[in-house]
Length: 209
Image 1 (cartoon, rainbow, N blue to C red):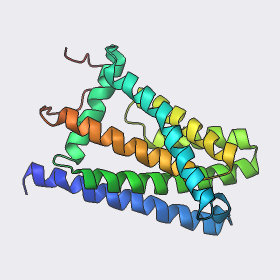
Image 2: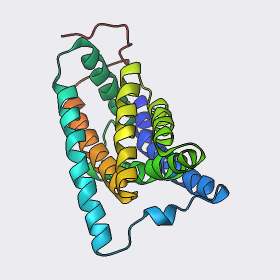
Image 3: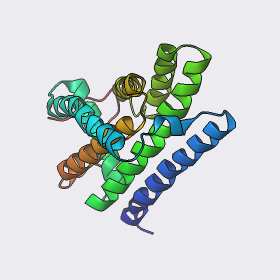
Image 4: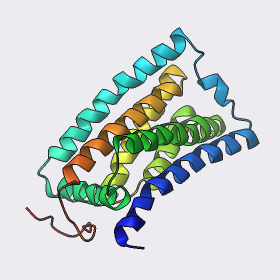
């Protein structure tokens, strides 16, 4: 099997991983009696409001994303190059439909696990703020492609965790997470479509101009 075919399996792996996270979240919630249904809005106006809230919450995340991908700071350029290399490896010929599926699964699965289950349970054992910080730290570790990406993911986790606490609603973080991932994946995939990189840049390497 050639390397391109192997890399094309990245989409299938992403679907399995993100779908598996949702299953794990539901299992943990069942074991520890976390009432996830209470944080999901009813159909109709409550759901529409939660979706609108999630779309609005995507805007500040996209502003930060735009600043990151357009910065000439060496540290941010390294981070950008690392993420672009990862996207090329996992989705060498990714389609809009594939990105939409992966983003939707990530939004639902990761929010069920981190905000819905872990933050709720840890917050119940301690305090809501402590639960938010611990869960955001774990969320950062789960996305620790580099030290800087860990910090970025930690900040995103804090924002999404605050969103759930503020409105006692999981739908808004799910929408914000999924829409952000879809836009970021689509945009970065377009950026790297004509580039060739053989290996990921290391944290201590200076990016090329």
